Length: 343
Image (cartoon, rainbow, N blue to C red; front, top):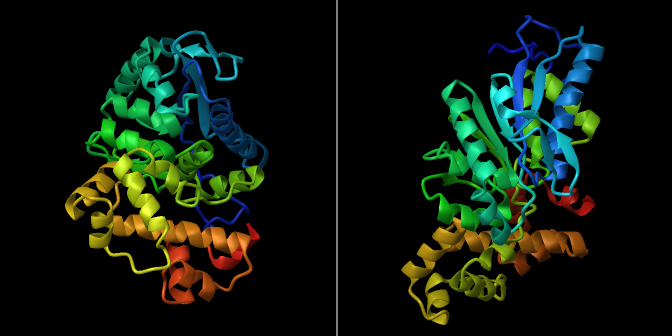
């Protein structure tokens, strides 16, 4: 589908020239009972804002036609609000089907939800839509629903960071990178936790017009967030496996020292190979990568909660100098020391 707008100005929010009369993108937002209220509203607000700005500023163009669909004519949100919806069988043929998150946060809540009849019917509708040419997108917890369909097999994806270990275990054929906020792969689009619903919807707007997406982001005050790494709680993820948890605790106590994998394996009464394998299975990381994440996490904490110099903080978390720490912070989090302290 050709772009609706020219992308002149590289994100400039000045005049945008309409270059053709391409029909509106048909978007079906498929909401299940128990849908995450904030996520659903965030998606709908992004597209409504994009359409309103087009109508008011850019000669009346309406780039997005959004249909809120459900398995029944009324969906109940996680907070118990009734939401009128079009039954999926009556929804227009979609260019893209979006899945806002289910309102579940733990494996104990999520796994039974994936077995529900309405979710199974929704997966069948999703697969049929893709077979007829639609793309598929899922945010947060609903990346599990998309993975259940098999559409993510052998594709790259992201998911809500705190359920990444469960996702890896359940869908080993999916190439998961939970550090990323939005991942496009094949016919599928996935995003990370909670308010990544905004990032997902803005990504779709950006495919039609980078300038319009930038303007919507300004109106909604949404900063660029390419990574979930700054939000993930590493200690929480480590609890998914006893050996990983013990290594996490052992490494945290030695961040200012030179960490040797042989020493860690000996202290934990295991082999280097077993330790490395378990970390890869649970966290998708090598021991070295996990230690680096712990060092970055602790450095960010010290930057935000102390007045120590960057050199002193670098030494406290095992880096030889402040320049190395600054480079890693910028590379991993997209932020410098001044931004972290200000935030």
